[in-house]
Each structure stands twice: as C-alpha cells, then as structure tokens.
Length: 581
Image 1 (cartoon, one colour):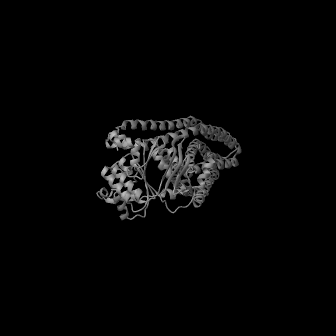
Image 2: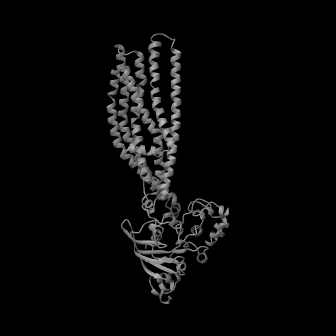
C-alpha cells in the first residue's frame, strides 16, 4: 500500500523535479559510500602511523579525511536543497489539483464531507506527503544504505566479528513489524480526531454570531475541549506504544557496541585483528546501530504518512456524480423556458418531491410558496442540476438538463438566496463575481436595480470598500441586495430568487419588484417566497406541500380555491377568513 502511495506522489511531480528527486536520492547513496572512507583511513592512521611510529603520511591522511568530510557535508547540503525544492513543487501541484477537484465536485460531495475534514486534507495531510518526499524517503535510504554498506565493508575486514553483529538484526526486524501493526490503526484514529477538532473550530468560527447571540461561549469552549482532549489522548496512545518498544530497541543497539568492544578486544589479544581494524569497527558501530535506533521513528513516520496519503488520494480520485453527459448538446444561451415532467426526487432513500409537473414559458414569472421543508428549494437544485432527479425530467428550453453542459446551464441561471454568502472582496468584485468583464457603470446599474446603490455610495470607499467574510459589516437586507445585484449582473436567462427580499422592508421590496419587471434583458423569474407581496403579480403561483404541488394558478385563482395560499393571505393581511376576497 505504501509503495503505491509513494509511486502516486512521484507521478504527481513535474518531470524536471522528478529527475531532481532521483538525483538527490542518488547523492544520498553516494554520501553513504563516502561514509566508509574515513574509517578506512583511520585504520591506516593507527596501524601505519601510530603503531608503526611513522609520521610521514600523517598530514596527507588527515588532509584526505578533512576533504572527504567537507565534501560529504557539501553534497548532503545540496541533496537537502534539492529534496526541499522537489517536495514543495509536488505539494504545490497537488494542492492546485485537489482544489480544482473540489471546485467541480457536486453538492452531494459537500453534503457528505465536513469542511474541517477537507481543510485537514488540504493542509496537514498534504504536509505529511511533502514531509515524506523531503525527509522520510532520504532517511530511509540513508539508514538502509548506511547499514548495508557498513556491514559489507566490515565483512571484508573481519567476517567473524561482523557475523556476531548481524545476529541482532532479525530481532530488530521482528520488533519493527510488531510496532507497525500496532501503530497504524492508532494513526488512523488520531487522524480522525484531528479532523473532528478542526471541524469544531471551523464551525465555531463560521457561526460565531450564533454562538454570541445565544451566549454559548462556555458550551463551545467545552465542546472544543472534548475534541482537543481526544486528539491529545490519541497522540499519547501512539507515544505509549512507541515507548513500549523503545527500551528493547535501545538495548539491542547498545548490545552492538558492547559486542564490538568486548569481542574486538579479545580478537586483538588473540591477534585476529589489528588495532586499526578494531578502530574501523568502533567507528562504524554507530553506522550499524543508528539505523536500527531510527527504525522506530521511521516506522512511526511511515505509518503517519500512509494515513495522510490515503486521505489525500481519496480526495484526489473523488468523482462527481453530476457530470456532463457524453451526448450533451451545445447551447448558445438559456432562453428561460422551464418544464418539470412527473419529477420525483429522493436523497438517501428519503422522498423530497413526488410527481411534480408544471410549465413556465420563457420570460414569465413563476412563484413558489409552501411550508418549511416542503421541497421548494429542491426545485432550484434540480433546475440548476445540483442534483439529478430520481424520476421524470427537468427541461430547460425544451432540453433535459442532463443533456445540457453544466457550465452553459448554470452560467445561464442567476441565483440569489436568503442565506447570502459574500466574499472578502470589494463590493464591485462581489457584484461582478459572475462576469468579470462588467464595467463600473454596469455594476452601478445593477446595484441600482437591486436598490443597493444608495447605501453602497455611503460606504467608506464606495464600490471599492472591502466587505468582510460573509458580508460582515452589512445588514441582512444590504447583503441580500448585493446578492441580488450579483445574480442580475450575469444577465441570466433564468433569475432565481429564494427568499431574496425577506430581510428588506415593503417599500424596498416594491421597488425591487418593479425593477425586475423592467430588466434590460429578457429572463424568466423563478421566485420562492413566503410573502404574498413578493408573488401576487406572478404569472403563475405554485404551492408545494409535502413534496407535491397542491395548488397552481394566479393570485386571484388561488384565493378563490381557499387553500394554503388563501390562508397565508388572510394571516399576512390580517383579513378575517370570511372577509377574504
């Protein structure tokens, strides 16, 4: 599994940086070879200079040893620079591609994935992928090559002493395998706790106004504390596992050094090795023992990398259910004709809409009313193909929306909802979000039609004023009017307004309704509202209850039916039922 994850990371590097990565790892192998030079020179220093009392080659040996040391460190420095450059390029490409993936994922994807979890994948999980390419991979190669090259060289010096050292290796391999099995599920658990903690923080920050409105700061503090505590405990569990194995690893590593000194001393006494050869063993004993000492840390890092990489790869290969059909038809624009034919819609088996049928001619106005949860907003979602129908058809300009190209369909639908989201940008940037080619005069025109021009002019820098995230600093009605101007600014064939004027006064609402009737471009207006005043002039009004259309007609026709619409009219206008009409 880890092998496939590593290959996937390498495949996502630019060819240039992939070659640099391979070159850097080759440098790592070469520096491991250089590691053997100085111990070999130490043998000459002891046997040929000190023991032989011959100072003549002393300076040349020391000079070579210094040059090898400096050269090795210089190459290691170059290697680290290359690895850092490569890993940063890789994470840059991956972050860009993951962000692009999320842009084109459908609504169901975001319904099923928490924001905090997605942010964790884009930050902490990606960083562990970068950490592998910049550090873990070269540490593994360094440890393996240092151990193998050292053992091979030691075998050429004295195979008996080297064989005694290798007896310890199988025990370390068994400990490593046991550690890997026990630590992996704990890293998966810790990764989930990190995601939950980030989600709690993200929800609290995004919903800070609600928290303060209900004075729930203490509750939120405790809720975050629980997730923070769970994340800390998951870390401690991993550390406890590691600390269980650490003493065994250290004992075996120290045994290598004891064997080297004790058995090596006996071999010198028996004349089997020279003092210089023993110096090679003592000089390289750390090269044998240190990789073993690092084994536990490398196993931990590998398992943590594998857990994070699995989450990144899962996001990378996530596929939207809503995509362009292979036989999608090209349309120059959306003219605005809408038709629902026997539409049924369910989410996870729960029915939302049942047998919905209606027809809206291009350029007309249709209004939708109904109790909360009756399925009104689902009509918009199906119209813009955020979801696909379970049964039936939704047609725009006589063509099933499943045969439209998503970019063309959604580009021809301007949407303004009650839950307004404005970006941390200028007022002008927010209004021109759907069409960056708009001039300032055009932006002002649409702001005027949405009755937003007056309050925008009084902002500190007018249309250049930076508004905070989600429109912080503006009232609910002001945010709604900017959102309406943004929806009109794309000159859509279908203008959808979902409770868009719920936060404005009646006078402003009347002005906006008048402006909508005289837009400089033709469009079909799809209005979802609870106010009778917002829909009484519509060409047709739909009443949706329990996912079905129970009333359909004009204002006068629905009043005559004396159903839900009539009851709502009586309540809003304070008209006794017997006097209605």
